[in-house]
Length: 149
Image (tube, helix red, strand yellow):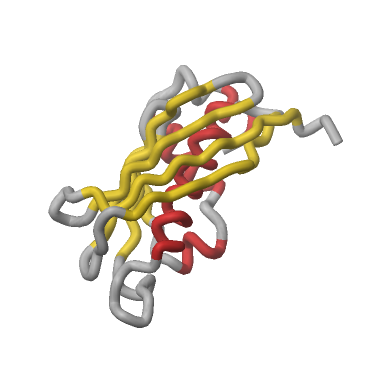
């Protein structure tokens, strides 16, 4: 999708935004972890990762895996909000893990808390296959113009 096409994503269909996200990619780490998009828009983004292959030595989903899922969702949503010619970069992230996933997939649902011109804040609720919350991630992104050095 061209950058001029991405300018119309706010008014475009959710399918266009999901196509943009898939074309842009989520980066090598999230790809290695098995990141899969489910839904993508400024208002709500959803993705999953498998537990298998992303565990600690004791068989629990690694805490860092929750954070990678959350950061990938929040940063991509912030960049969609930022629009063409602008870039959102993470400046703060935190996670509170409240349950351990040991099998299946976990699902992250990202919703905005604040969508400003220069900053976004997103909350990502990550649940297991039974819908139980395992982790809550919050990410703050700074938005800057690409023309600024």
